[in-house]
Length: 199
Image (cartoon, rainbow, N blue to C red; front, side, top):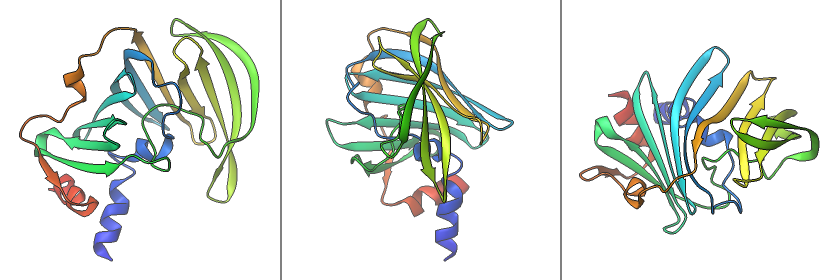
């Protein structure tokens, strides 16, 4: 039971973003680098994202240190890496596993175009949807950039939460950015990952 509580407490921190975003869809041909800005109530967490032909690398740093998440559709895996601890967790990439791109969740209903807006150098269409969360429907807004084929901002006013890609640079991303760092140790389960985080 104690281990279960430990694991549950882990997800709102390092891996919380994993639970918010849905698996990337058809727009995997985009190739770019960008900074990210997550706002969760009063907390602001900057990050970086790199995308290349379906592969994705995302980096965040908070009070617990740096976390790198790499999505590899070609290998059907997601790697969550803690560089300072020299370890990583491998999870299967399935249609049900949350991913790292901002994307309208598959369970969203009532998708509605509410406007058009120039955002971070891109013409976007602004959509409002309702998403089932716990026992109620939550309104979320997405800014879809047609040129990239994916949203570049998501906002939920109810939770005072937003995630946005800024300083987007359409550029070639080296393949090595989507590989595991040399020397990192694979952990067998989330429990082991939680133990390393709490050391």
